[in-house]
Image 1 (cartoon, rainbow, N blue to C red):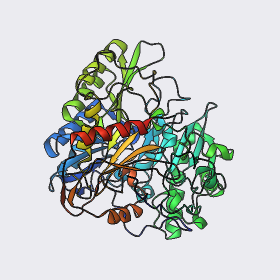
Image 2: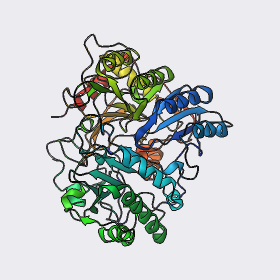
Image 3: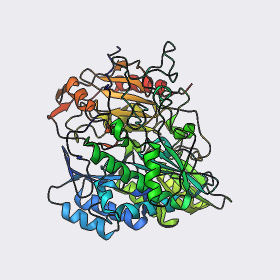
Length: 552
């Protein structure tokens, strides 16, 4: 049965934060129901095979023996003991994963994962990521950025440009870079613009009576079109420095406003990062910037509310990624529900050593291993498929994610990972059962589908951007809806009875106060237990989710 959709926050100004930024890091551990959690930042998702092995050793010695991949290409270690913080930090420092204690939480940089590997981008921008990270760590004022502030470095293909970053660099074909200041990915508004007024209960709709993306309140057309975010062209060799200076201009504006803003769109209108303010900051550093057309302020971004949007199109498809010339290839795999066992992780490390000793964690909870001979890449893809990783773009597991859920998060109303796995197993082969056919190459995509995300409460921690299928646990069961447009048509299925835990109203109030849920971990809450969902209900749930995923 349909439920009343939740209500989006409204108001005349972007939300002003009242508390401190509690985003976890490698030094600031977060307490969860299954122990402490550490989030290790990997700028661009880049790490060597040796660094990856050290992460495995840390998770094995100190954590729960698994590694979680986040929606920003970072890695989390869960189940840590209360007294292991110093040892974990020393392990990370020794591996080169903690270059600055004061800046470790602000090293949030997303990279086009296939940059320089498949010949599809305009430039290999991995060097931009490394330079930007060095500039961040070497600038004391940058340590004041929020742990949620995000940079995106896009090689021109438009993948990470769609992540709703605060500052985005996009490679251009003429030796320049497009510098773009972000808009609110939830509401599509430019920095400092008033929060959109939405109908009560508005979230998303797939019905013909309310076609999305036509200027309805809260859509990109309504908000961004009237007051676009700044977009400037800068010389390519100055792009990382320009990104840092833009972030520092935000830090100054946040301090001057007194608003405690963590993201650029949270600044009050009087202190917003306008084009003139960004250009002035760059000019003071000797960087010439040229205004780009307003249309390019949103180019490459996943448009909220457009029926054509299929966010999985942006992610590297699982399979082989041939390099130009065909003699070498990269592997692209996805972690089932975003979590890898140490055995799976170590197979990826071994594959990396067979290549050029490098791994790239993607913002879509996957891993790219570059530089293998094509024959070796095919062999390793089969090995990883047998180990349970998603290696085929046609797999029903591709694009399915879940928050931590029970028992790790006390706020969750269900064991969403177990239910998601059960629903998939009810209608599809397990990812541990390899396909009898050769895994799908990454350049051959199956039918277009929306991603799916299972959430244990209204906060929806880690959910995708753009359009996605929302499977939300509630007091009476799971609610399925399409998120990312203006209104929602929801269906209630698969009872998930529970004991204890926050009420739906309390959970919604918590979500209303946490607009950055996409990369926010679980938090302490009331204890309780969730009864399992029966197999017949899981089969019904899986069928409903599969139908909702299809892109017309």
